[in-house]
Length: 181
Image (cartoon, rainbow, N blue to C red; front, top):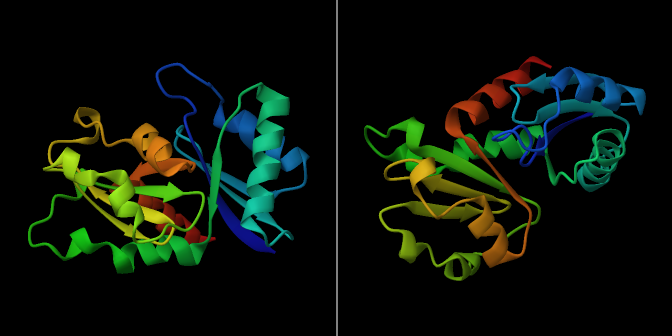
């Protein structure tokens, strides 16, 4: 069995694409996923399956959400190793007196090249900062996520990818849950 973490983008936000986590859990169990566990209403779902391919798991979840709930929901599936790498590779954690409430991670559907930073034109969003690491973009917002134009929609448009963003506290909790599974 392989454990996957599916990050659903854009559900239960401002009354859009509403899905109760209990219903999502039951739906995913009904199609064969085991040990389904959700975390908060924003769409973080652990599943166990014989399927090793993250892309295949993500496609199956996306397809089932559409069938069961009628919502077109992008899904990014990550592994324990990917989540653990967030803690090892986040350059902003090395800063003295860093406010982790301003740290976020954008999980991307594909591996990015270092040249993608040029495509993002992050310099337009100073004093916000970003750093690319594989299929993640580490973000440090100067004021906060609600007061920037450097968001998931901007990232998706500029890089032509699927992206979903989680705050640092959620990333930390998801890693803890992954370890406990």
